[in-house]
Length: 124
Image (cartoon, rainbow, N blue to C red; front, top):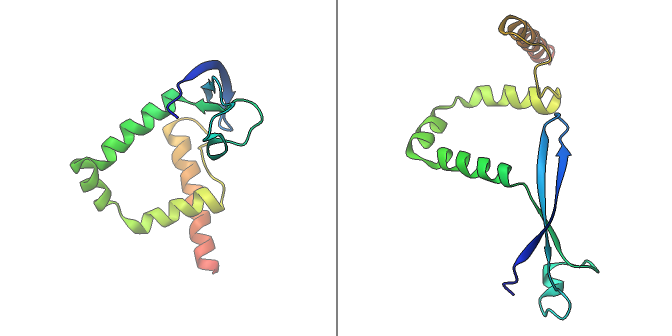
């Protein structure tokens, strides 16, 4: 119906990775009597929408980079064989972050992951 939503509150949330995010909550002023209410939401109270403004801005900026001519050129050059290995490490082996600090230690940690991946390939 074009109704503007008023900022209701801000909340801090910590992600699984330990990053702190600020979430803004917006609340509709009056949903009672609105003919589109049940197409919009099913809550008994007014509709509340949550928005992470910083994350939205970052996603927009990165989407612009990916869809630019230069971004399309680089994306077309990415080797597809490597993507499957990283996907396997992230999804199947649950490896999302390096646990050690420093270039040398990260190289060792990644080397262990590569050995584990190659042994799994050789075993199958």
